[in-house]
Image 1 (cartoon, one colour):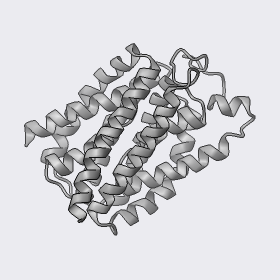
Image 2 (cartoon, rainbow, N blue to C red; image 1 turned 90 degrees about the vertical axis):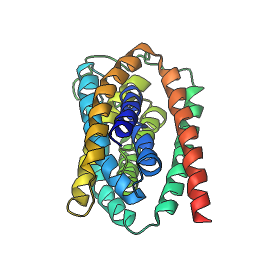
Image 3 (cartoon, rainbow, N blue to C red; image 1 turned 180 degrees about the horizontal axis):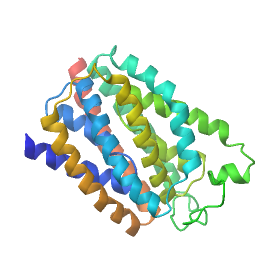
Length: 271
């Protein structure tokens, strides 16, 4: 069990470090199907694992200047009440229905990322919107150019992402990155760093809401988290070497593969 948890943690850490999300998509199914947790137990453990891993990886991205602080903090702040609501409903849903909904959501996110990967202007880290010293009072490029008109979409996205974090027990990177890239026109490299910031904050809030009510299997969580943290640092180096379009398509492919597996297993369990 220890070796399995560590091995899965390495894989999850590589993904979250390189892609700024997707790690929690791997974590929940792995905890359920490979390590025998219930869906509710897995979503709680995932918040610990993904939250800590994202925090460590976010520091490295921030030092590289790949974080849009205003956008990230706004997404996290407006997601707090939605996260609490999502946490409440998580306890009321059948675990297989929860996993089936999880699979459907991953397919939607994958479709958005694949559509965006065909756009020559938005997914490339060489895009002019990425720089190491953002202007004073920086937000998203859309906020600056449009006089703040991107604020409403950002707030709506933050509410949705917060609800997803609370309900599914995930950091929400699979939704945050598409929102930043597709809706707010943030280049992929900056979207990764900003996503990690939001994941860390959202996970902390959702975990606090479950304090005293969730079951924590520390024999699994500790080695899984330790391996994931180490691997996330390697994943960040991978992100620095690959073009944004490749990262976008890799992200989408990952979502489709995992969604297919989870969807089939959950559907069979419900019938």
